[in-house]
Length: 331
Image 1: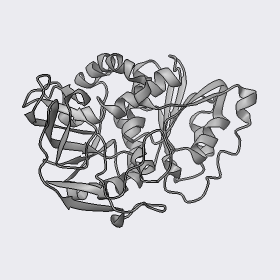
Image 2: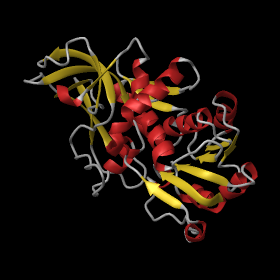
Image 3: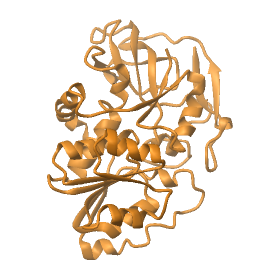
């Protein structure tokens, strides 16, 4: 079988030399374990941080070792009575064709209820991140105006739709192309969207939300966060999910330069790690699952075929080449 390893720690943007593909013996399941044939794997922005040798909320990837990340696949061998052969499961050992892990560390999913890929996206970690960040961290309330950066991505697209379904007055999104802007408004029901490459974010946000915003869901950081701080109303809230705009920079970002406004406006800027909120997973699935099945919440996917193309998919994700969830189909 094949796996993708970290060959070198990137300085700035990752390149093809950051990764290596290796042929290794087929693993076998030991007591309490399952062997999984992976069908889809996820590439996500947070993985870029794990490529640095730096302390964070998750350990860094190790040089010469396989990368890790969300994956969904079929159990082909089992040494656990709890997870039978033929079950489909979500787990955290992607970037390889087959994975062995403890049965207690997988989540069984139903391929008849949703496409397998959905369990890595809208019904998986990215959708759950959007749900927790908007409702629990930003404390969104019906009638409020919401701004989402990286709004055409896997998390941002769900944030905007959940806000609309939960009664937002107005939802605004930023994206990196005219096509993505049209997708947000025409397909996903955003009230307004803009291309952050066209002119300064602060200017476009003021035009889209002349009365200000109540909630900002931050996937980008930098100039987007600075613009949001300027437009937030009194007691506004920010869910700080990611800062993809700075992940590949080799120097400190210049923005936000207006953080002192948070004092007078009494803003709440709160970061979060979604794995600390797993108790909310049943609530998320109970509310979002029916929306997906009924077609009220859409989930675009960008799918790349072949494990050997996973590095290119990851680099493309960081460059914004995806609309919705970026996935690699292994089989």
